Amino acid sequence: MLQQLNLTFSPQADFAAYVFPEPQYLGAKHQLVSWITRYIPSDASIVLDGFGGSQSVAFAMKKMGLQVHTSDLMCYCHQTGQALIENKNVRLTPQDVELLFAENPQAGSLMQTLFEGVFFDHDDSALLDRFRANVQTLACSCKQALALCVMNRALTRKVIMGHFAHLQAIPYANNPDRVRRNPSIARPIQNLFLELLPDYHAAIFDNGRDNRSYAGNILELLPALSNVDLAYYDPPYCNSHSDYQAFYHLLETFVEYWPDKQFRGGTKRYHPPRYSGFDKKKDVRESLHRLFQASADIPTVMMSYNCRSYPDINGLVEIAQRYRHVDVKEKEYRQSRGGKGSVAGSREYLLICGK
Ligand SMILES: C[S@@+](CC[C@H](N)C(=O)[O-])C[C@H]1O[C@@H](n2cnc3c(N)ncnc32)[C@H](O)[C@@H]1O
Image 1: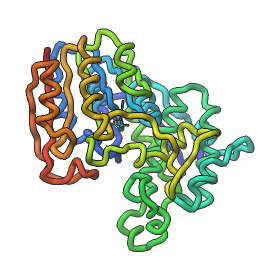
Image 2: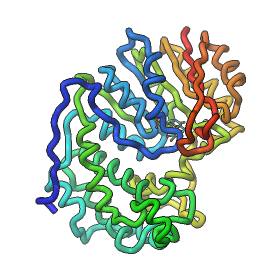
Image 3: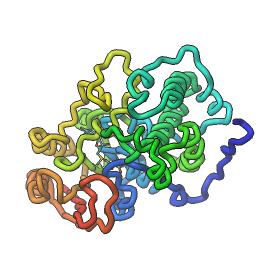
Image 4: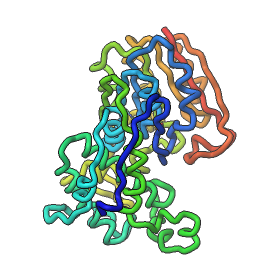
């Protein structure tokens, strides 16, 4: 394997030349980043992406030379944050890669127990258990995060539809018509990982600032941050594919590798889920109020929203206006990008909230 791997990279003279590796994440804003970031005030220096997800907006902010704090409720999103936003220059060597896929008698069997025959065959499930144990032997937390982040992306390529809220992965991977349309679903996971790794390596750079990634509820993080000039919020679009834990539970289980969780239903989703506050109608209004209250010290708050969300845009603006002056920008999705929130013809909003 060592001889086949070319992990060389060339630093770019200009941060703008760094390319965010194409994500497959519901609600990701990678195709809207230039529209979003153009509204960041030119005097902003320290910024927060409070619902980082794939990290596409945090990455665009890093490219602008800003000091970035990025955060997400989910630990697998934080791994991407650590690998691409916080990380200045750490990459995997060919020896690291060799180690990641090596046999490991200490490996556990969680992925095989839960997901063999559901999302993966025996060889791929066993590989994931081995890989997960080997991640812990990498020299630093940046390397560990990078390995997990690239493997998580490989898993969203491997499984049809790029999420884990269905039971079609194995039937589709065994269906020649489906495989012809999407060959990735029949490829070995190791192969997908090795193909993706160079794009991730090429996206690692030092923008001269100390950027940080966090895992946890944004409402608990905000009191611990100071001197933030701008916060960008992209909460789940409540009412339209907002349950990220149903879609990506497998990635969280892979990263956390819980010894003592319950796993429920056909997809073996972990239980209890983390509390979001933004994904259920009964909670979301109060959470939005709390978000604006906890952001009171931040001069500019920007928020992405969509016409299919609850509350509707007028309801959201009413809440925001209790705390701030609000300007609403609007854009129509010309093409669907996955998820009910981004179907063609639906409208994307950006609230720019000053004091
Ligand atoms: C619409 S997605 C963000 C997409 C992101 N802007 C991107 O470009 O990929 C919403 C994210 O909010 C996260 N989330 C949900 N509740 C949260 C909370 N209370 N605090 C922080 N993140 C939360 C979800 O895990 C999900 O990744």
